[in-house]
Amino acid sequence: MGEVALALIPAPARANPLESGGDSYMGSQTDPKPCDRVMTPNAPITQDVLTIPRKLTQGKPNIVGLTREGLRAALIAHGTPDRQAKMRAGQIWQWIYQWGVRDFQAMTNLAKAYRAELAENFVVEIPELVSKQVSLDGTRKYLVRIAGGHEVEVVYIPETDRGTLCISSQVGCTLTCSFCHTGTQKLVRNLTPAEIVGQILVCRDDLGEWPVAGVRPPERRLLSNVVLMGMGEPLYNFEGVRDAMLVAMDGDGLSLSRRRITLSTSGVAPLIPRAGAEIGTLLAISLHATTDDVRDQLVPINRKWNIAALLDACRAYPGLGNANRITFEYVMLKGVNDSDADARRLVKLIAGIPAKINLIPFNTWPGTVYERSSWERIEAFAEIVNRAGYASPVRTPRGQDILAACGQLKSATERGRRSAAQVAAQVAAEIGGA
Ligand code: SAH
Ligand code: SF4
Image 1 (cartoon, protein in one colour):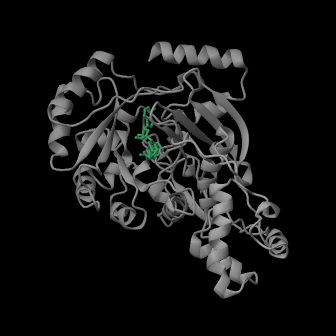
Image 2 (image 1 turned 45 degrees about the vertical axis):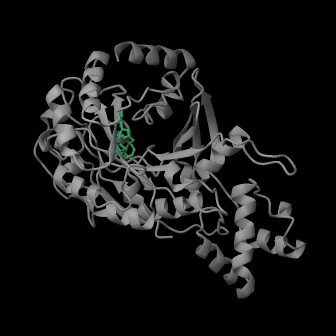
Image 3 (image 1 turned 180 degrees about the horizontal axis):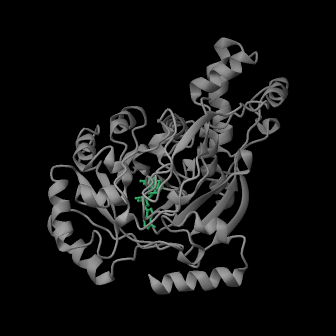
């Protein structure tokens, strides 16, 4: 499956990112070797990682996350006649993704003997739900455990006209955006397609959103949209994310329209055209700054692919138009990127790209050097962007009482092990100070 684990060379604690040194080494999953330099106080802002091939597990293959073609080939390899394999793959997919069935015995349109063969040769496995928290505003945060004992957070956000699931693509992140708590997490590995698509299945289980035979399903789905905005950089787990999204978008799979799935990238410019061609979901770009100097500090991958390179890649994204706009995410950081001049530069930069701008009030975390911009500042910024003709919704922080907001997805796990009173005190302090 080409899966790799990343062993980390211990990275030093980060200094104030706005003052950090000019070392531009960028560690990433595509880097063939780790940085072998001695760590100094000016050590790279990006963690250095070494990729080590993971041993494949000896267990039975998991059907979840296999592409159509992958499943067809696996069925043939285990004795399904060639001419039947395509149809069987479609039937099995429908049971798993449309009916939520994980027990082969319940796949009643397959012959009994064939069901037994499947059970002998395959498993249907999704991540294990470890805990669930429900916010006062209805947001649900799940902690799920995946192979190796790693834990990943998944957030469901109900709104009046939709329900959005925010899923993760990696455990941790090799990038170190200086305002993001996930980027401080040391352990990193790519999630498998099963672990990615499995997050959607875990949420459907919890919402009880599987059809019941003979009962007409409701018009509106509870889980209607998916955003790849949890932990990790989706384009650094390209194949894993692609295969999972192909299952999510397929009519025999989860049957989510491509226009209801948004992939958010920090700016891996060279992979953006490939994402358009091979995945084809909507695209969100974590822009967050209007000059390279500031973006170098906030989103260090900018030192590899700067704003101009990133926006060129965006302009070439296939199918752009009014119904298919790029979302530019912009985290509002007090005194760093939130001036009127920034707002004016922003609209100039993206001129000609069908776009909307998503202003995200900074979500604070312990140890961060940043502060959230004031509401007056955010409104003034939004006003300039609006007047230039761009929709600029301010993303209301959701699930704050359970630390489910963007960029908080590391602190939550760590705090989950503390007492409820400690958590409440910390959250109150954070919300109060934001
Ligand atoms: N790695 C991808 C997707 C996950 S992050 C990316 O960077 O695009 C999802 C969004 O949350 C990104 O726009 C990210 O910049 C933003 N984010 C991260 N930390 C945040 C924080 N503390 N407050 C607000 N937004 C944050
Ligand atoms: Fe990784 Fe995205 Fe966080 Fe940057 S903002 S550290 S790319 S998860």
